[in-house]
Figure 1 (tube, rainbow, N blue to C red):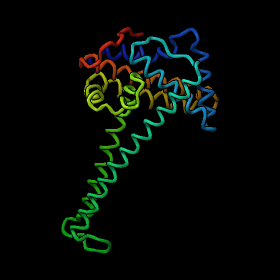
Figure 2 (cartoon, one colour):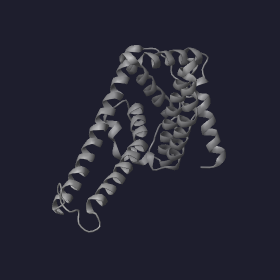
Figure 3 (tube, rainbow, N blue to C red):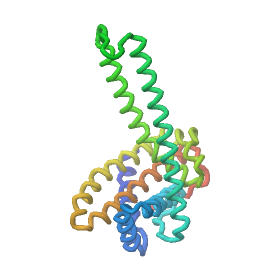
Figure 4 (cartoon, helix red, strand yellow):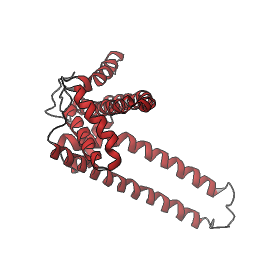
Length: 240
């Protein structure tokens, strides 16, 4: 991706939450819901809004969604929670398999509790390899999960979050990689600034703004990647 296109994607993302006449109302509501997440229920409305962001951006909508149709918003938030739970179960299953394999390897080597680990410190090696595998899996999930959320949102289907062929088609593109890196950079830089400003309240609304920007980037990168890959028919390519 060219530097010009990279800059355009970032500027589009930063403008996106403000690209509506009622942007202030939206950010105020989003910030208020963020504060109220301590009582749990508002989390679903907030997550439902992010689903709408993913859905709108993936379909080429240039304006941020509004906080309305609260029933649908709540349901979308619950669905996203279900996707997260299913994803967590998949990750847990993978980690259990890896743990079992390394445990079996230790037993077969005769390196049980109190046993001599043998030449080369087999247990230490297995521990390091296991830790590295954990990091690789965690990074892979962190990279792929936003695409799963985006595909779920655009298809409005829980099954779409686990559509392996479509997900892989999107995440293996330069567009998605670029958008993902930008989203992480925005989350780290602007998220840190907003967190520091939370002491004077305004940062809470800033954190909501940052979240909307990151979800925009995830959905934009995934949709653009599928479009360039030839796997995304019907996307409206109008952008802010």
